[in-house]
Amino acid sequence: MLVTIIPFFLAAQVAVDDPSRQSEWAMYGGECTYEVFIISVIDNYLYASIKSDFKCRLKAEDTLSCRFQNKRIRHTYPLKNETGFVPTIRFVGGEPFEIHFNLSGVQYLVVHKTIPKWQLDMIKVIVSQLNDNFETARRYPQIIEIPARGNSTVGECEVNVTLGRTDKKHDDDDDDEEDGSGMKESEDFELGFVWMHDNFAQTNGKFRIKKIQQLKGCPQRTIYFFFRKRKDDGRSDGALYIDMIYSTNYITITKNHFMSRMEMTGVMNTAIETQGMQLKQMIDLKLRRIDLTRDSLPEIRNPTSISL
Image (cartoon, rainbow, N blue to C red):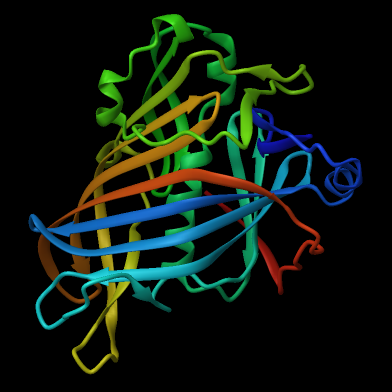
């Protein structure tokens, strides 16, 4: 059974042996579960780690319906004695949202109108890891480095894109640590490329995309903020704004593995003062499994469209 992972770009072939379940897959489709792992480092000190499940399913040829689930956080700063991940509400909620694609990648999002700005920015930076210059990847089948333009969480920016493909017989995993792709591959599905209406083509070997953005040079750059600062008593103490400077995104795709890692650096400020603390964030997005879903697609309350 063919399940769309990223419209116009990536799909998965899922083995379904039971004839009765084949009809269910054809009727309801599959749901992809990604693991999101976020590490925030402030002034070279590990501040917090967040884990969450990110679930997406196909709504239309160009649209994914997605949501977050099972959010957990681990603090490592003083006055917090948590030793493991615990449930948290200080992350994006479980409200559904939609990702709309075109041939160049993510076109826009559909969210509910009252979504807080900090939650929207968190969604944007995670979703942007599915934004992979599809037309460029299709046009250049081998290793190449090219300048391009693309949407980002701080506006439309110049981006340096490096594409690389290696055949399986020439593939070397020694550099997996650099792009974060060293992980156990799944045997439950096989990934392949689907360029528009072309046939499913298996990913022989390894396909890589590397995107580098100098965010200070983005015209009409918008401010990005990723979480809210709180006092010791738990009350809100205003938003922490991040003046993003630099970002690098690594995407690795093999026959049984999809992973995207984004590394960002910036300076933290509040609405009323400049703190000047250096922030580094690493955000991993790993495809863990594809399951049959029998639920109807969720509706978005008071929907509105938002650019990436």
